[in-house]
Amino acid sequence: MEPNFTYTIADLGQAKFKGSPLAVIGHPIRHSISPAMHNSAISKMRLIDSRFNNWEYYKFDIAPEEFAQAIKLFHEDNFFGLNITVPHKVNAMGLIYGVSADAEKMGAANTLVWSEHGYDGFNTDGYGLKKGLKEDLGIELKNKTVILLGSGGAARAAAVQCLLDGCAKIYIGNRSLERLEELISILKGFANSERVEAFELATPPVNLGDHGVLINATSLGLKAEDPAPYDLSKIPHNWVVYDMIYNPGTTRLLYEARLKGLKAANGLSMLVHQGARSLEIWSRAYVDAGEMMRAACHTLDLPPRLS
Image (cartoon, rainbow, N blue to C red):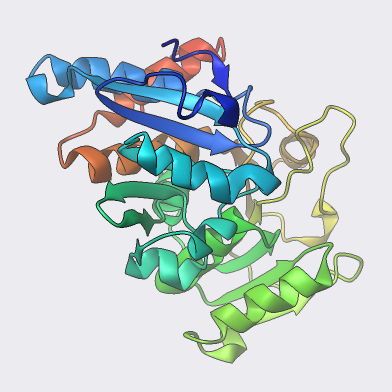
């Protein structure tokens, strides 16, 4: 089988994925660099542990209407681990056998592990965000004010991580008010309600603290013609900006942030660290995040950098 090929549900149950196959599932998924990252790390792991000799990581384009059936077929084909990405992270929660405490709080799963009765779900997005903010922007979430854009699976993980890490306040805005209200209700179930506030994108929050972070967890920025999802004149000059989008490397939001002199970073470090944590969960072994970062930079034709 070819790790760089984009497979579909038609390949499940017919193509023979030998050994202990792993995969990322999304729609669309052709752009994903996860196979390059994971297979590079696995190649290094093979040098010291032969049990990884038959591990290989693939990518599958699975449409939303195919997702439930695909999870069943992945299990029958003995895919040992699955990464779940847009748009399936929330829907995965209704299809798993067991769930970790972090995924349950976040209401979304991005990492599935095979078990006899089905898949167990975990969420490593919050971990990846925390590492990315520290690595690229030198900040921690404790006592910070946060503006979070989005309410999908990645936004849910980010919101929970912000609260767990002790942010002072989190404002959450989204185009769909129904999904926004659902996320707010989840968060207020385990956090002081005064720390969580929804806002309409047309009326951003005011009287913000001097130290904070704006996090984009929407898809605005994936296309060159996309506008910035937020008016950066509405945040203090010493805030930082983090865009979960990593390709393109500079979105309109990041361009405008740097033009204003704000520290800003894309989501590549988050992608690498959430991926490394997923591989640690599957393998129960040390995973070299630096190797994954090198593979990511090579695939994206970026200069190498330390992870």
